[in-house]
Image 1: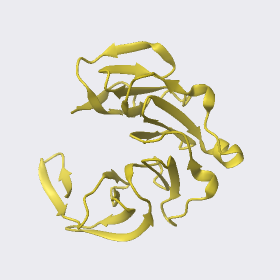
Image 2 (image 1 turned 60 degrees about the horizontal axis):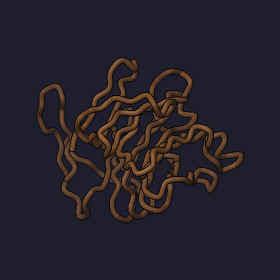
Image 3 (image 1 turned 90 degrees about the horizontal axis):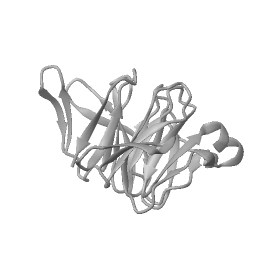
Image 4 (image 1 turned 90 degrees about the vertical axis):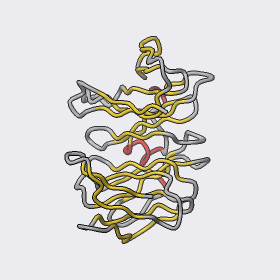
Length: 209
């Protein structure tokens, strides 16, 4: 089921029951479109006044995470055993040099403030990708790799510091960790499955379960 809620009135505005079970969803920055990941494709949909309609889709199996860039012109999609693919939202194209390798299973993606790249997490690692690096060498920013052995990371939130060098990650060890310092962390006492940072960088909120 895909539900769109009005958070001010706390009311359900639009609901759609697709034939396939959605795996992930993302809102376009404009609020007029959404991405929905299914078992065999990522669907691009228009949000109308009382309905949701697909207008395009890209083939991608086992996608588990989708995220729009801040400008809305790109989106990143990641899943099981295939890394992260960066698509042009308006054309649906994904050049070969925009297929970002690294994770075996992608659990979280967050774009840099200027859309020059993104950070991601999955398994026991968090990686940083520069689109410029991808175009030139098809490689991530290896010196910023963050790995905690025997952990499983579930979510990541880029810290808006203007440097694109730090993020918060959460996982099964109940810790909230800074990726630029493995010794800088806080014990949340519970397993956190998702984390999001406000644009100001002053606050973040988490999902539990």
